[in-house]
Length: 185
Ligand code: FES
Image (cartoon, rainbow, N blue to C red; front, side):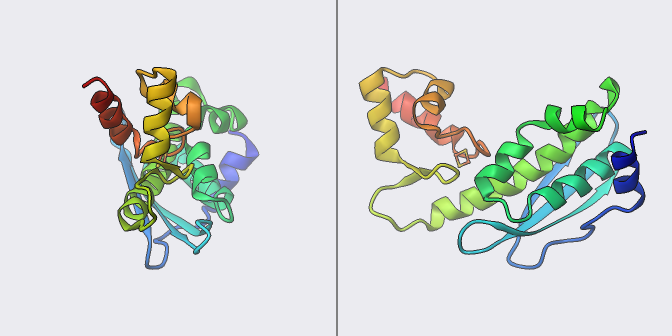
């Protein structure tokens, strides 16, 4: 076991729940039965001020959650979501065995789920003139509709390539699908 992984497993940082108001993500694995919960608190600039976790699982899961909760502090929700979307980066860094990569994935899924919860709330509370669809990249409904129309986009990944929408936590992707479907009428 590499030293970083061992250290974070034996001395896990940030165990517990972030203070209220917090946004919480949960993830579980049918492969090994592990479960993880990660909560974040944010400041008014959408930066993570606190991240904490609770988990039942193996050393890789505990270490991954400990490391992620340390690294997301001070990051924007967008950067935190992007970190969670790339479990392979952490798995390689920690030299995780192939059959344990899903434990790193689980930790990352809990992080992304916490950011999704924040994004859903922020979208609903948005009071700007144009409806906000993607809170991670601050992309409005009008912008996405225009990109779809002008460039003839037909998939979420094409929309993401065109204007970033959907490329962070992913919570806006069902809404992008709705806009794509509406463009077919
Ligand atoms: S709201 Fe997070 S990717 Fe769009």
